[in-house]
Image 1: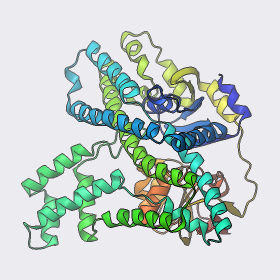
Image 2: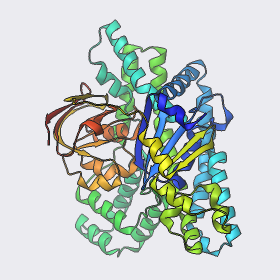
Image 3: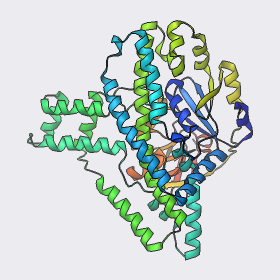
Image 4: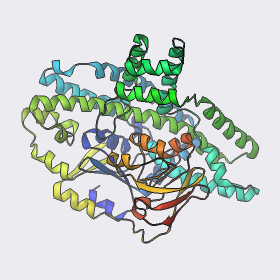
Length: 498
């Protein structure tokens, strides 16, 4: 298997902020068979890095094969996937306990050999003991179109109207994401603290001044619990008192309440539809898998972010000791730590990777690496979509609604601040680090993604229209375009070019 094999395939290219040191674990997980099971993994996957951003490249054919196999396996014996998830969650619990211990540990007291050992053990623990379930994404990319197709055919045969609405109900989230859980924890803090204050204004003043010892201690525990939440594939970002106090102020001022009823409503809506129509076994299987894998994907993101935090911590300590630019070390791989310490690794290679770096993984192993000009030429030569001068863009409906607004193209975290309330957020694929902009947006449109993707889940929670899988939205649309997002029909229409 060689990197150039990708040039002859129809590609899926996801774009995000990221560096090799933090994205490496994801590459391994996508191409590994989780715990050695028969469930397929991606045959190969490439990540291309440049200046703090990453393109994650797989083939659409491979995505469909992985997703289709998961559904087929579930129809034959659902216990295969359910038991696999159960085993993973047991290891996940061990991982989180280990994470909190390591997060609070002072690495400066370790010897050089001790720090290298810490690095090696961290990598082995996450890669092998816990492992990154890449099969979730294969299902995500396959199931969206497959479910839409199945429901449309079912509705046609049975004279049922509005299949898109039915799909929306069947794929609605039935469990809170970690963002919902964090919000619920903060609301609980507010409710407990209210008992000690005459008004919310007094409570707000205490929050701002950090004058309530009990509340301050509780906030400290909260910050530790969610210490990974602001991080990304670009590295660790501290979640500090300023951020959590701002969130508390927003919840108090807006008098926000619990969203638990939403998930109960979503679950009942699915059950009611299923009882009413008696869907086919395959439709039912995809719906059940969607519920399972949405939550699994949420836990997997915590897995990824917790690894980022600890890898970042190790790299910062290595950078301090060896007097190496930390930003440069973000382009190193876990197995290179020993060479960096003993001088056996040429740091000029990291400078080349910073300009451009392509990594090919297969069967959970790094099998090819290209750096500098060679990597840049490879990325430039990949097959690209030719969107032409389209006035309409079609995609998959992820959250119902219809709005008009100004398009804002968000390719990386650097672009988040340009999204204003009421804008239409256009992105290759959203991630947790985009949440601040998503909360301001009137609608979300993505190039990639499926029914369990981040954009779909968050849009439903925010109750805003969302269209995913357009493939070309970020190429066709420009900042300032006035667009109509019709998430009843899955169409984005350009009303007026900027």
